[in-house]
Length: 527
Image 1 (cartoon, rainbow, N blue to C red):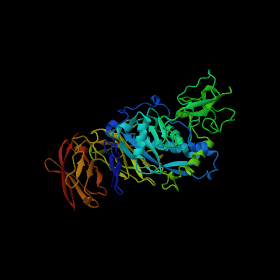
Image 2 (image 1 turned 120 degrees about the vertical axis):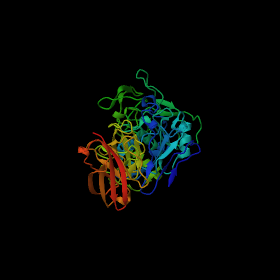
Image 3 (image 1 turned 60 degrees about the vertical axis):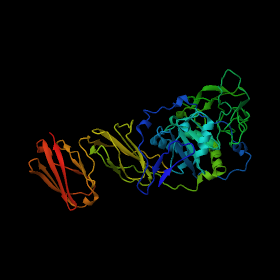
Image 4 (image 1 turned 45 degrees about the vertical axis):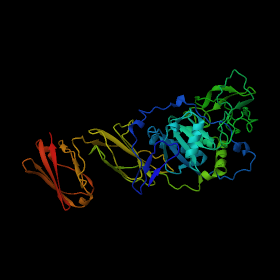
């Protein structure tokens, strides 16, 4: 079955095949999608967050009857990823970075017993106007065109309207590529917004706090586009927020309306000290001095400072999921964690493979639904020539650069768990263009036919030859038998050790004879 994701604004269709039990879901990335060639705004050039306001649900939260919640129960939340590329299909977030981002999201929410899973296949959209959109209305268009019901929709784009991210209460979450990945908490911050959490410094967005200026008792702010529903006046009337006092006397009515998040007036990225407090001293409207708490995900502290949601914030998020967003919650986890590493079968240990159509195989991993397979000329995988997701335990590669050493690795995951690491590195060498050829009509080929002393010969034989004894013979140019051996081939791809160490340089003929037939080939031995 072919899945095609379309909208009225998509200029180029991106599709991929999902076939029963044997499928590559996402194909090879074009090399221009590599970070080496990407032109995307840096994290430092983007504002931390574009989300504003306090939801009507949160304003009424304290006046409602308590929500029955067994906090030890994990809430499994459906999440629909939309990965944006340009019209050309390039520029999409790398699959590895996306998996790392999802892992980080679930790690950040672990203490709250809230976890996320992929509701459907990843939606791969090619639309430059959404991929880098400069306005929130363009993001609204993107979300309302492509949203999937009963899920938290998240869009990964190059530029989310000049922000690292934002959340539209009626739309979804947008995240910038360079604000994602392991160690980044932007996605968790925006999901916090989606689950009713405001900034602890609500009202200070777009303003710069100064210790030398008396702190006001109230602040006004514009949260056009960030109301609970789309039906709102544009521009919306300004809203007013009370400024929170450090003594907590107005915490339930001021700022984020949350008492254990404490005052914070810093609406820009800031670093913390060894106690994870801001280095900037602030004072509340009564003159009481304090430092902001950098551990909170909803603050603008740098990523290395952040580590938690407060207990009250956790209660609010869980109550949101049990009431307003109950349609996002699954009754139970349907896929188990992955606890075993993948093991490569071939190629390994510098095995020689053809530069085109090389076969990669590995052992199945319990609970894995998909595998990310990467191959690179560099051990740090800074540039990848293979970057593929498949549901199978094998992969046939396209064209690789000949006569080079490669490294490859496998990472298992499923729709509920993406934190399993890559397995150990395996290595292989590609044969040169002159050392390999296309398979014949039956699928037979061998390589390399330019043999150095001690080099094994790789055979690829049709399935009909398996489980039969094959007589392997090599003759020199004069027709003299140089070597002969009977070999039982149990795999369609086998290594044949030829004792060429004592043979003079020259041309030789390879003969393979078995029940299914006879195959001939030419070898060139060089010393």
